[in-house]
Image (cartoon, rainbow, N blue to C red):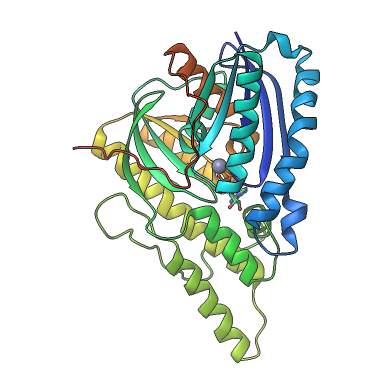
Length: 338
Ligand code: KG4
Ligand code: ZN
């Protein structure tokens, strides 16, 4: 069964073609980084216009890469939320047109659901139930995942997402956009213990996160140095900031594993491509004896292959979307009940 999947929830226009829900025949991501860099963040209106320009040529390129014709596609999967409304509408309208024009089933996919299902694109697949930590530019959340499309929220960020914190700190340090990769590269040459920064909500019960205070702590630290006319130790600051984010993410996730008694863990989303976060989880999996599933970095950041995995599960269940499918900016997930 060959499925075309697309993803336009944020600033990546992405297409994938999957066979039987897990074999990736093509996976294309056109990033808009260049376009938004000069504004230090995503400009939603520019993002949707760029999606519109890219979507058709990219669809044809995906078919070419997969060496198949449009006639062989049996279903269309698309992200319809959460994300930027204008950007989502481009992808969803395209998917509807294709589904209608060719009489194909339309499969609606939640972007966060897709992020953790990226783990099924790897050879070693998780078994259910598992805990999923989704850490991206828009989301930081822990889920108890009972099945592909059935999952419950344990906790999430009360303010900034982890990736957003990376991006904002990079911006205030004048390092550019997107910040995650830049900070983690600079952090490699710094001492993670050199600058004391807060570990927000770590001493509180529960699974919620908060990252805006950490960003403010970095801003105060920089302001103090500037007032004194001292240089900012950029490598040490990046390393200390990254260490604070990693520690909070890791400890809260371990808490979720312990509280639920679940032995499988999936870590996904753009920030899951962070080297030090990956290494920390790998070390703990060995020490604590849980099973860790980390999609490769290109499946952590936004892509359409993960949308294909989720779409295929909808297809198996015959959960087809109608042509009046709408988009949404935010997800509402049911809570996990202890
Ligand atoms: O999942 P994603 O591609 O898009 C969203 O759904 O938000 O995640 C993008 C986020 C950005 O905030 C980016 O700064 C962050 O992931 N990111 C990283 C790294 N690579 C990307 N954060 C930390 N370390 C990285 N290596
Ligand atoms: Zn994402």
